[in-house]
Length: 168
Image (cartoon, rainbow, N blue to C red; front, side, top):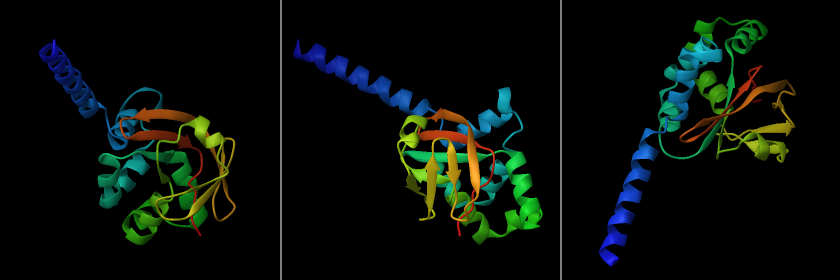
């Protein structure tokens, strides 16, 4: 009997390990969402920015739980216009890119239910975002709305937002 229980435990653990390995990361989930379905082509700029910021893409591809606030292409285009910069200028400025992208990521898997219970969350860039329901307010007092919530990934969750948020 003990041998059977041991074998069953090994099988269950093995299945769990295989399942965990097959769960796509936040990066893989974002790329898949950008490739097909209702979000096809919506995250081209975000993915290009992540590819230019190798440290963050590595972190979001590993184990650990993260929440990503993912701006759409329209959100980035509005930011470029607001800042008077081209996409190339932003993508080539590593310091700016790292700061802005890090401001869109928090530690922990924060689904919409846990977000609505929060008033303020700390980002990977060590700055804060204020939260009121589905509205995020950045440190420059600019608002962004969560327009799609709870896109699940193996190592966290993605919330789509309509405006790029900025640290100070």
